[in-house]
Amino acid sequence: MAPRKPSIPKGTRDFSPSEMARRNYIFDTIRSVFGLFGYRQIETPAMENLSTLMGKYGEEGDKLLFKILNSGDFLRSVDRNLVDAGDYVHLTSQLSEKGLRYDLTVPFARFVVQHRDELQLPFKRFQIQPVWRADRPQKGRYREFYQCDADVVGSNSLMNEVELLQLIDEVFRRLKIRVAIKLNNRKVLAGIAELIGAPDKLIDITVAIDKIDKIGLEKVNEELAERGLSQEAIAALRPILEINGSLQERLAKLETLLSGVEIGRLGVEELRTVVDGTLALGLDAELDLDVSLARGLNYYTGTIIEVKALDVQIGSITGGGRYDNLTGVFGLDGISGVGISFGADRIYDVLNTLELYPEDITVATKVLFINFGAAESAAALKCVKSLRQAGISAEVYPDAAKMKKQMAYADAQKIPYVAIIGETELAENVATLKNMASGEQTKVPFAQLAEHLL
Image (tube, rainbow, N blue to C red):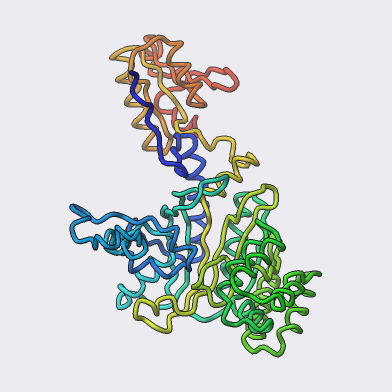
């Protein structure tokens, strides 16, 4: 019986060298913009204590946490009655003390609290690391994926939101992806819940209406009913979700609707400040107001941000928002923060679909030296060292194989130049440099190779 072909878990992916070149193009672009805006990099562990993660993402998010079994005999101290009863909710805490991080924001909040005495506030950090979610794999949705986060903590200023929108715009301008940036405010959502007479159902409302783009308004209304909202409240909610007109017109309508609800009025004021500040600076992206936008996360308290690609049907490719007291759950009250997260894997899919990568993105080696034997390869190695010192990527084919095989390697690797040092070239201290695209060949002295290639 033939051995079974190995595989990887659903919702995860391998990446080849050419794919990694494309991904690194994304990471490098985002990283350079983070630096341009004054953000500094940190890293946190792949696993966190479950006590750090649980309860921070809402009911839906908690279900998607990957739990890690305790080491050793993890069944030794388990309450067998819970096993027999099938009470897996309470059983989990006895089997598992750690989990894979669901996002980078909650670990960052833990980091701020743990290292508070070492940090100067406001603190601007960025983080580029993988996260894990026990979600159902589908197009654009993976169980393991990278997030690229930027957050500012220790400042209540809405200037931070305006700056983050400028940062988002700059990243997608460099990547040449046309996007729409959607805005909302958690206070607006709280005001709406109060306006329709269901302030105690805020979480149920936000979880449901956040799915409008996926399942439509009628299905959302059905879910709201299942979550205990009255038909009167659902009917009152509908015209709010269907507000139309230009961005400024919708803001004005929302302002009128929520004028008698203090928290809603404050949310509209914050939205107007962010919108006006952003438009005053200019934006390549489309800016939009979406009162259904909730992002399903309980820790947002103010601005909510979501970015959609305009030319590809895929979920949000960036999201974020304001969280006024996320660190409070770790014992440090009063630290306000706002942040965004770029979904690198979805951005990767968008760039692949639209073929927006630079033409030479997958080229790692600029020149390959053909190997004709010991003496020739020794000379080639000296040339390679000199080229590398000049910042030019170069390599020598490791074996004295047939010329055809070595040239096929250069073609497969899309190496733009091949350098030939045979007996004649070795005697003259020159290399025959072949342009693989044009076929043109030029004899270049060893000492001038770097200058010629540059």
